[in-house]
Amino acid sequence: MRTFDIPALTVSPATMNITDMLVDRAKKTPDLTLYALAKQGGYENISAAKFLAEVQQVAKGLIASGIQPSQAVGLMSRTRYEWTIMDFAIWFAGAVSVPIYETSSAAQMEWILSNSDSVALIAENKEHTDRFGQVKAAVPLVRLVMTFEENCIDDLKKRGKEITDEVLEQRRKTNKLKDLATIIYTSGTTGKPKGCELTHGGFIELSKNACLELPDVLVEGRSTVLFLPLAHVFARFVEVLCVEGGIKVTHEPDAKNVANALASFKPEFLLAVPRVFEKVYNGAEQKAEAGGKGDIFRKAANVAVEWSEALDNGGPSLKLKLLHFVFDKLVYKKIRAAMGGNLQYAISGGAPLGARLGHFFRALGVIVLEGYGLTETTAPATISRPAHIKIGKVGTPLPGTGVKIAADGEIWLRGHNIMRGYWRNEKATKEVMDGEWFATGDIGMLDEDGLLSITGRKKELIVTAGGKNVAPAVLEDPLRANPLIGQVVVIGDNKPFIGAMISLDSEMLPIWLANHGGDKAMTVADAAKSPLVIAAIQSAIDEANKEVSKAESIRKFVIIGNELTESSGHLTPSLKLKRNVVMQDFAWAVEEIYGDKA
Image (cartoon, rainbow, N blue to C red; front, side):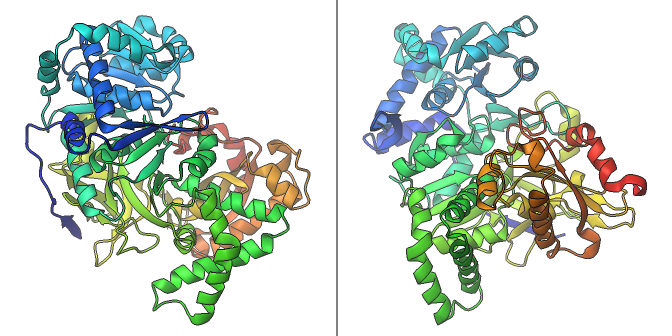
C-alpha cells in the first residue's frame, strides 16, 4: 500500500472562518479589483473594499430578517455576482449556505431544503420560486423566499440599516475553523443526494495552501472567468480561492456565452471541466474544416502533440521546432486569440482530460494543470505543478493533504479538506470514513514521484463473462473528445464482450455534417442511422481500441437517436452519467448489442 503526504505550508488559527479572508483582503488591498460586472460595452470593476461593504450590508439584512447562527439558507441560481455576495453575506451572518442547482426539480429542491432544515431560499428568478411553490407545504421551515431578479440584494440592504456594526461583528465571529460552512449535496448518480458537511477550515486551508504552492498561477491581480455552476464544489472553492489570491473574477451565467466572455475579458487563467477543452478543440477543427483547411489543422494538431510529448523525452528536434513555429503562426495563435489571447494556465477537474488534449494545449502555450477531488474533499485534493507535469496524471497532493492506494486499487484521501461527514447520514459516513482517511470510490495508481493517475470508478468497473476487469473511463474519455460524440456508455458486465451506447452532440452535428458532405439539416435521430455517421463513429472506436487489449476493446456499438442530457434525466447537474438510468431507459440498445449472446 503506497502512501504519499505533503505537509501543510501554513496552518490557520482555530478561531478563523471564511469571512476573515475577505476582511484581510480588503485591509491588505482595498482598491484591488476583485470582481468585474459585464455591462454594455465593457466591465464595471468592484474593489475589495466595495465588495466587503456590500456583503456587510446584505448580511445585516439577513440578520434583520431573522436568520440565526448555524441556520441553513438555500441558494439557487446560475453563476452570477449576486450569488457570491449572498454566499459571503450568509457566512457573515453566522449561517450555513446550501447550494441548489438551478436546474433541480421541485422534488430535488424539497429534499435538499427539508433535509438541511433550511429556513430561507434565495433564488434567481420567479420561475425558481414557482417551482418551490409546488413543494412549499412540505418544507414549512422555509419562511423567507427572495429572488435576485426582484432586487433582493437592495431589499436586504434596506432591511439591515438598523443592525449595528457591533452586532454584525459578533455574528461574523460566531463560526470557527472546524464549524460548518456549507452543506453541498452530491449529484445523486446512485440514489438520493447526500449532504457533504464542509467546514470553514476546509476552504481556508485549501485556498491558503494552494496560493502558496502555485505562486506562478495564482498571482494577485490576475483575472479569470467563472462559469461553472456555483452549486458545484469546484466553483465554490474557486470563489473563496480568488478572494484569498486577490484574483479578479467575472461571472458568466450562460455556458453558451463562455467563448464570448473569454474573448472580451481576456483572462490569464481558467478553471474548467474537460468538456470545455474538448469543445474548444472540436470547434477549431470544424471551423478549419469549413474553411477548407481541415488537413492543415489536423497536421498542426499532430505536430502540437508530438512537440509537447518531446518536451518530456529530451526535447523537440530542430525539424519539430520549425514545424511548431510555422503552425503557431498559422493555427495556434488563432485558438489563443479565441480564448482571449492572455490565457497562460488552466486548471481542469471533474473528469480525466485525456493525454492528447493536454499535449495539444501545452503546445498552444496554455499549461493545463489537471486536478482531482470530490465534493467530500472540498474540491481539489491533488493538482499538477507547472514545473512537474506529467500529461495524463492529476498531480501530487496539495500541501496538507495525503493520498494512498488500497490493496484493491481504491484511492483514499486525508487532510484538512475532508468533510466532517454526510449530513444526518451516519451509516453512509461510516461506509467511506476510516479514522482520518476517506474512501473515494475511485481507482488509481501512484508513481514513484507521488503523481496520481485515475483509472476508473470502483462501482463502475466492468467484469466481463470471461473475467476481464475493464474501467469504462479508459474508453469513454477519448471517445467523448470526438466532435460527433456527446456521451458514451461502455457496457459489458457479465457479457461476452465490451459494447458501447453512444449519443451524438447536437451542437456539433450540423457543422460536422456540412464539412463531410452530409445533410446538415439531419436530426439526431436520423443521423444515428446515417451510414456516414456510423462509419465515422466506427473509425473513432477503432482508434480508441488501439489503446487497450482485445479483451477490453469495444466490439459492437449502438448510436442512440436521443441526446443524453441533464434535462433528459441521464446526466447529473455536474454532467456525470446516471448509468443505472441509461441502462434502464435504453435496455433495447443492450439487447441489440448482445442479442442471443447476452
